[in-house]
Image 1 (spheres, rainbow, N blue to C red):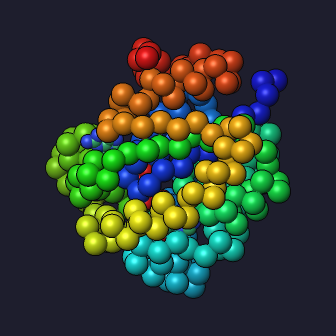
Image 2 (cartoon, helix red, strand yellow):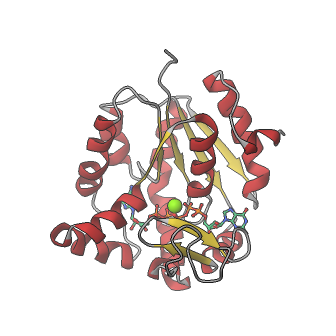
Length: 226
Ligand code: G5P
Ligand code: MG
C-alpha cells in the first residue's frame, strides 16, 4: 500500500486554495477537507451550533479555535488510513498545534497572491450554497448565468466577499498566519508559491506533488508542466 500523504494549503481569502485543492484531490486522489465548507454546512444543518458560527463568518472574524478543532479533527479521525488535504485549516497557531499533536503533515502549500488580485477575484465570486461549488464570473463562469451547473439552483454571493469585509480578512489573515507559516518552515515542510494566476501556479504545485508522492497525476491537469 502507498504511504499515506497528509497536506495542508494556506493562503488569504480568495488566494485559490479551494480551486487548487480540487485539482490536487482530482489529480492525486487525496481526500479534500475545506474548513469553510464544513462551517457553512454546520450552519445549514445545525441551528443551535450554527447560529453563533454564522455571526463570525458574516463579520469576517475567525471562528474560535475550540470550535474549529472540534469540527475538523473528528473528520480526520474518520479518514484514518487515507491520504488527505486540508484547505483553510489550520489557520492559527493553536489549531496548528492541535493538529500537530495528532498528525505529522508531509507538506504545506502557502499561496502568496497580491491584494489587488484578491479583491478582483472575490468581488466576482458566486457560490452554490448547498454543495459549496464556487464560480467566478470571469475565470470559471456557470454555464447558465446565476445557476449552478449541476442542480440548476440559484447561486449566491457571501457577505464575507464584500469589499469592507475583505480588507479586514486580509489584514487579519497576515497577522494570524505568520506563526503558523514559521512553524511549518521550521519543520522543513513549507512550500510557498506566488503569482496572480492559478493556472500558472498550478503546474509547479502539480510537479511538487508528483515528486513528493512519487506518483504521476491522473487527470486533465497533468498535461501542464512548468
Ligand atoms: P473559507 O471558506 O476558508 P477563505 O476566506 O479562506 O474562506 P476563500 O474565500 O474560500 O478563502 P480560496 O479558497 O482561497 O478563497 O480561493 P478560491 O475560492 O479557490 O478562489 C477565489 C475565487 O477566485 C473563485 O471565484 C475562483 O474561481 C477564482 N479564481 C481562482 N483562481 C483564479 C485565477 O487565476 N484567476 C481568476 N480571475 N480567478 C481565479 O472561510 C470562510 C470563513 O470561515 C471561517 C472564517 O470566518 C472565514 O472568514 N473559517 C475559519 N475560522 C477559524 N479557523 C479556521 N481554520 C477557519 N476556516 C474558515
Ligand atoms: Mg475556499
